[in-house]
Image (cartoon, rainbow, N blue to C red; front, side, top):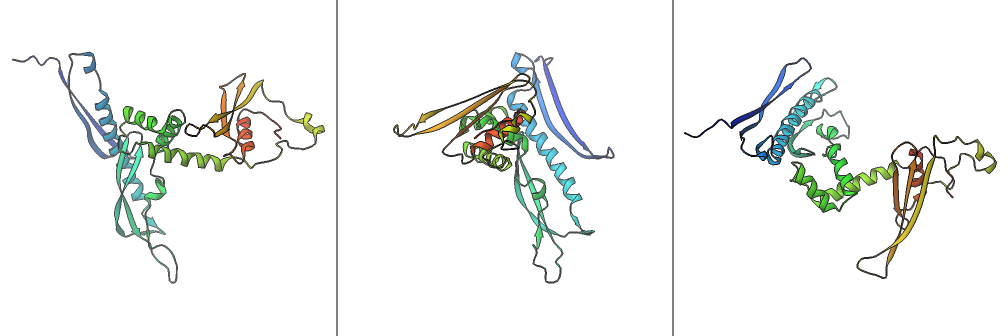
Length: 273
């Protein structure tokens, strides 16, 4: 008879509770059979962890969305009538979650030119991507090529569906455009007063900060006769981590504001002319 002393089963059950500690959802998210014979048999394998995270994320998001939708179906004290639903995909770090986005009829006033239906889920997830995933995509894409970032995400997280170079690039550029909109206005001088006599009244920064700017020309890989100028900088405070900036003069139409925002984060007052 085969020895089954090393056999073991692990069953993970997820329970979702409301504010009154009442169970609103119960789901078995994993039912694993484990045989302990080698080091790799200990704990979860990468494949098992991915499957577990994806199932856990699906159940949690579905339950949270259902609860949120039930609280946002009333308008002006009236329960909105359903007009069906359409599928949406919410991209998260732990899997792409398929959801049903319901549509509701809106009460129409006489002569009003307003939408006939509404999809409340668009308010909750307008971009259909979790902030944590967008953060990792943009962070890794700033360090390695888009394709490499997509492969790395798919290797360590259960997001192989939809994780490709094009998607990562689109999300990174979207985040970059949002950051661009948050930059300050371009100014000729960043001093509070343009008179040099008043410069001595500016507050002294806390601690010493060493700032370095440098630049160079990078040659086009395909056309060796073309190149572009790249300007980079680094600030080193006495207390804290260094910060880095970089921009291409020919494509950045307002480079001064980028440097200003960088220096402001370090607590520096500077006059860049």
